[in-house]
Image (cartoon, rainbow, N blue to C red; front, side, top):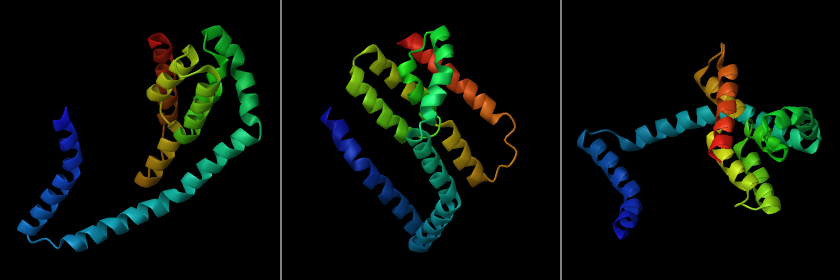
Length: 171
């Protein structure tokens, strides 16, 4: 087991040495290539920053305005029919937009029901079996300059529902 600790501590420096060594052997100007990559990274951040800010503001407004409560109240009859705990509806809705905001809701669930309770376990598995649909779509589509999304949202929502259903079956 101790070997794995040493291996995990040394893997990143080892990869760094391999990359630098490869560049030196092939007479590549490593620093210039690094600078080009950093500039490309900043260009990507510049492109997606408005989307990120918009999503963060939207999640904040959704939580603070009470709109999330209205949305959960609207969805409660469906959760009663399916047997899904209505206490987890805010987590499911927010997870579609922001994983970090959903994590804060998950911590609230842990505080109220406990991490080993049915709700805590189900919430944990839901967090693992679902994706930040709108965040992922907006970031990837902006970066890749995709304008025709066709059925992506519908497919992602169906996959999210399948993940939630699988979570309920597993737990």
